Length: 371
Ligand SMILES: [Zn+2]
Figure (spheres, rainbow, N blue to C red):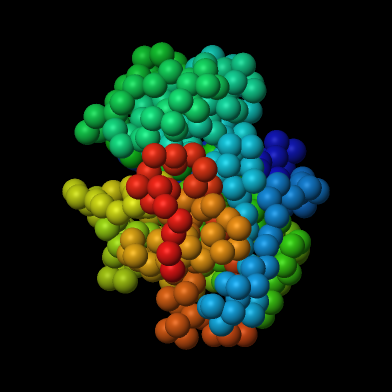
């Protein structure tokens, strides 16, 4: 169901609440004067018949983790089985398909790793040029995988979004970026790709009276997209109750957690970030993700590197090689179960968004993790 032309898509400005014609608009719209213009994709008709029938990733009921966390209804949604080993494949399938449909020749983005590999693969599949501004700490093997699919790479400077906006305007290319406007650039389409996770979850482990979905968050498109999926399923009459979201960040970079705890309307930009969870180490989180957590009556948790490494060891005991940013969800579930914020009777689904397999050379991959 990522997005459906037959359901009558239109764009919606979350700031002035205006409905706007659908089309390739990235951070501004000719009929809206908001600046920045936070657009999202909406539909005139409920998305009933366009739900996909096949699940892209399995759900796992891990016996040891259930005992460890004392959560008998604990599940892992294993997104690492997707073609480039992360949930970004869901997003980039939408990006590349739309870029092709709108006759763009070139797609560009900013990436710490997973997103870039996935975009490069999907662009290759659609016969599109791909250029990626990469994080200076992005490991060489990750860069190699991006190049393998034919992408060209440039290391990014202090203001990557500004850099990207200028180059996309000059070259008339499609920006495969986040839904949250940053330096005047945004993409209201890609996050639609995350919605199918919601649909798969309700098929694979039907909603109990109380279900928690634990999601790692950088800028927060995944949080927004999964929540949007559940809300659209409710509108279509497929579920009665919505889950609660528990959003996770690393304690060295937790702008969303800070804004949530302090009741702020939006997160602040952090000037310094640290921690091993590089895939979610974004100095800023979007208002769209913060709103999703609040709307779900959920919570936001920051976990430290020690907790993440311990969760990676627990996952290894289940036979899973999971990157730190994703293992963070299990660390958060452990914390929430211990503090009884999540009671034993609740169902919990942790989204394992990315594999550890691409991180060869990372310090945490050199020896077996110890709990
Ligand atoms: Zn507006």
